[in-house]
Image (cartoon, rainbow, N blue to C red; front, side, top):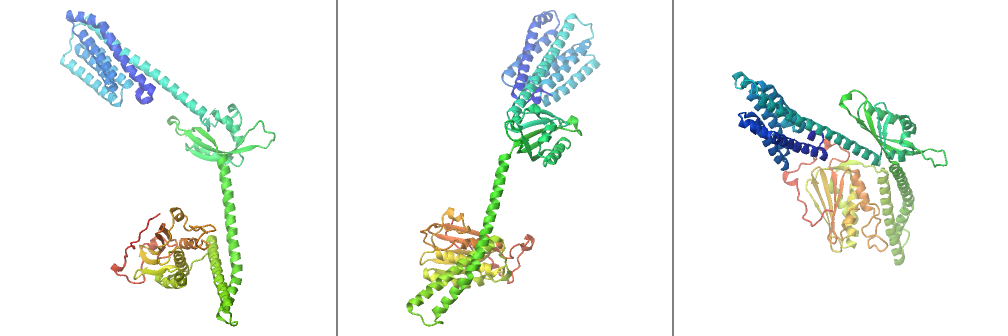
Length: 591
């Protein structure tokens, strides 16, 4: 494996590049040393030593220049192909030194395996095959000379072989040093990480023995790290959590699976006066050390121990607070239901008798008494309405509001609701109008609840409308739902108020000086009833420009499976032109 692949870090790559430069300098120095002798042999008629020295010198200069230009892969390729070329030259020069040429050529793939990438290694072996083939062909054709070898050729072949072997040995030695440096750096980084990580790190052998414990484990367990053994950790585990820990450890040790568990572990405190042990909540992450050579056997395990006591305490506090809030909410609902039932009986009597007094059943009243009786009757009805809303709200919160779903015509609830708020609208000089799509399908829902939804929405719209303005009620089909919208031209709401729509006892303008009366339960009851029908409540508003409240109710009723609502069959035939009605062109902004 080449150095660049084995260690992709900065230091191994730098060592690889330095090795390339050193190889080029070795080739230049060796060629320069033998060049005078090669020139002498050239003058005496022996050409091969000069060609070998010149090729090695040129290769060293070129590859060193490529290295200085940061063309490291080309430099490596130049050195490899130089060895292959020198081997081919020796092989073709004379058959008696062909074996030396083959040995020099073989050094090329060896050098490529040490310094080159995968492509260069592959190509170097192909080039070696080509050199061998050319040597065999040349020998078969009798091209290499068969005369006895001269001393110059023998010396040139020996020097070339020694030079190639020296380059390979130098490269291998540098690579070995690079591996040692890289491994040492990796171990140093590993130990630094283990010693300075906040979580306690413990490494177990395949037999469950503790091989290594980090410094942070001393603070977590309150003891020296050398005191931690496999048995010691097991004894520190809470007796109720030991089976879960042993199971998770076995999954990592034998099954090679990563496990994450939360257990209680004892923390020692040598300064504690009492003997009561202190247990911490610890999150343990167990990761197996997978080794392909030990496939099918047990694995070493690295465990990270993290103190999560604070998180567990917060979860327990939140759970306790949630239970307290639920109990308080339940107590509130029971109180409202009890008080509502207790108040309705006397209030009914007050409203009934005041109405009898106003009609003169008990005798004629003076104008002053008539006015007093009217005020009593009006106040009693107001209190009854408040009690009714409180009862409805408590039943919705308690989940005891039962829907009576039956098919009915949704447009039939508009006129009765208008009749019930007509007096209120006249007092505030508000005009009521309705826009209902023709041929609406029947709605499967609780008619009384839907009437209450519309009544609360219209009453709320009238309450916050300006004198002389209009409150509009639109009703149309929207896909598989009924779209019921109430639009007013009143004071509107700010974005922060829109976000709290449906919150009990909330009014956009609250406080002792608020100009609008009411309990703030109207829209919360609407939201509760809409949720019971699996519907949706939407609000759009601008301050000073009015508010649009839209309710979407499923036509086939709540709690119906999707496949049953995929196709809605209306009870009345609809024409294609009547199925769609454009949205009213009203200025609005979605919040």
